[in-house]
Length: 252
Image 1 (cartoon, rainbow, N blue to C red):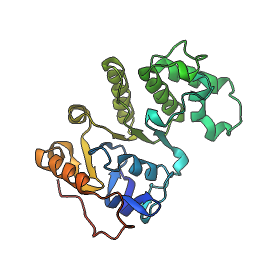
Image 2 (image 1 turned 90 degrees about the vertical axis):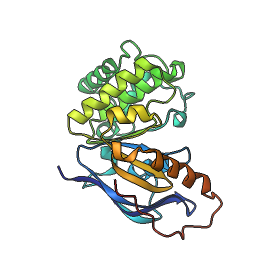
Image 3 (image 1 turned 180 degrees about the vertical axis):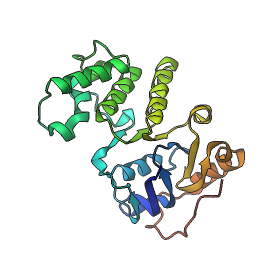
Image 4 (image 1 turned 180 degrees about the horizontal axis):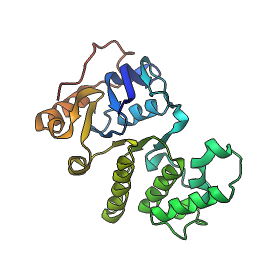
């Protein structure tokens, strides 16, 4: 397996104020990587950089020849406008926009893929429901169905298991394992350390700067987690544009 993503001294932020500092490292093709860290650690910012929503303030992100359109991205549920009048079927179908175009219709094959994806996540019969009628768990299942129809080699999941029931979590983590078995590259931002330890062989611990990156058992130590918390608590959101020294991840 080759390298799927490579970060070369990447700093990401907003209005030139950094939120992720000097990240260097690589994600192998077919990796199953957890991204963990305290609230405000820069996890969502890093993911926005990976999928091309946010350009680096400095450094580069090499996506191994993939266009950003070839990366499936599941944002946090809070980023979805649930008041938008769109059906579950059509929302999942937005995962096919590279093929259909923004205003293209679905042929029979497309319709079959959407229905199969909904069945795979346990949403049979929800096709005509509007997204605003869904519970939190149903919303998350729908987002996973949209990822399924994209059939992407790289999958980026931002807090995919927050505020959902145990049954939904179990069903969706099984889907993540299936993607990993298919040799897809999967990155997920998570808060549940037990879930990370049980399911993700590799972890990046982030606290605005990288704290540690490597085998999960070596990364999720009490010392590393405490260091990450202290680093985030010490960070000044009002600081001037980036002028900090480089801080590379500790060796695992």
